Length: 223
Image 1 (tube, rainbow, N blue to C red):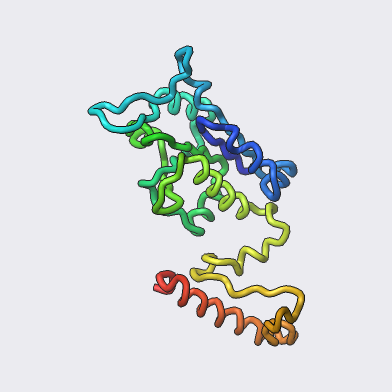
Image 2: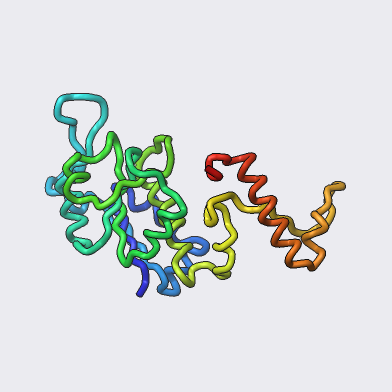
């Protein structure tokens, strides 16, 4: 069964081009993944289609109202795993992407403005996820990052599933260096082991350089 991902957003047009391109577009065309973007304003009840309001107690910015979010998610399906993209959420990681890829139905809520009404977090959301310690214009870009990270792990999406086994973070460290033709460029040569045909030596080189790269760039991963 195809993985179904529903995105709840104030800006569904944000996803139109990215979801139609490259592997995401191909995966949907082949029926491996189905992704839908829902306009949150379709679940508002006033002629201005108001989806946000001033925060109680005062303060800068606006807060997304609970009613349209609840009604939209409930209309999509009550058995889905509901994720809120939020700076306060747990950090996105490769292991988390792997867990989400095993779900049958994901609903991603893209927050905006100062965030969503707390009652959405308390009574509707199953999980809050952050894509990093920085603030974006809204939850749309983080939602797209999550979609890409998750869908590429769904069987059949990548042309060569073997590549997943060796990429960064999959084994708790960064990936080894890559080279392609030409074998020599501006005096810089490709390491001889890569063209030696010795698979045992090649595997050892990849493991060694992966650890070196990780130790230099992300020593925290080795802890």
